Length: 467
Image (cartoon, rainbow, N blue to C red; front, side, top):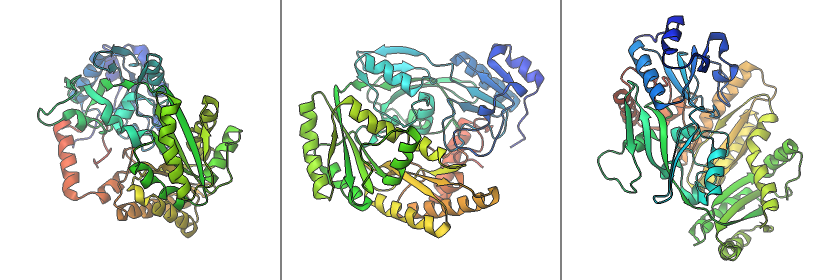
């Protein structure tokens, strides 16, 4: 591949002919926040940031970048954790946060058409006020829907409802050469050739830029009840999950957490968790139209937990009680982040029955390598979030420890028949681990798909499977 062109003042003036100059950040106007995402340690400043407002602007920008061989990095809110929205080759950063409009609520087909810059918190508020429900529920509510689609985000409700891919009916996309295309639509079924929509979902901005999305909605459940279940050991807590899943009452969410992470959240929020005496907990949520209906679900699940060794069953059947629990759960990432100087994350997913094996391995690994690792995650679908903490290590020690720890954790995940990422994606940071975990032929096929969509490799280079 020939070298990418760096954006110069002539390019700025040319781009300003179709994007207002006041929505272009150039040179020293580029804020520091655009040089990294939520966890990236390195800094890569784009030459220019284009804050687009329409599909037409995106198409013109992509066409210009293609004609001039300029690297282009799509970006939403920048809340990612793997460097997927970082401009490794500088060039143009395409910021979609101003494309944040709701376009159509189709109550006949239960779909919502919207732009990619809509935040998850805005999406939830919009549909729930109207009696509808968008199930995917990643922890970072200030992320954009475009970013969620790009990583196929999951979240806590995935155990019952599935992940982002399950709620995308159609996408409007702009290809690397500026071609505008619609893939999918409002139809419920489609067996018409290769599903290009599903290829785009989870591709982390390497194949196309998403400019509109058609989401599938459900009727809004009227009531929710949460159970906080303390266990003497994590093994007992995780052991309760398979029989819960086998029961007829599948919870909306099944989270696992250990006492030390709860204490971190208490200190961060300055408020007490309802219980912090047990070593391990399951946090379950149930939804339905009446409290009586929900009780018929969770009574059996509570009995299963007690049979598996639960010390108690704490029922949060009011909004205030549930809010205290889920606010603490939502603060885990920020609480851990505030307790150290720097951190990085492993977002592996393993079979549900292997969650305890992986967590026990993490406990042993802390002692072996001499580094703190905090862990919590989605017990219902086997997705663990393990955070490796730098603390007082110097930069050289940190890089050595981080590399060794990650290699061991990903090797262990592979031995348990797991995958590199459950919901945060691969980006720039996890490429080598993806390549280690997949056959060479599979990587070659992925690279071939990239070549077909983006022959000049200008769209988000060096991400996912690209060198």
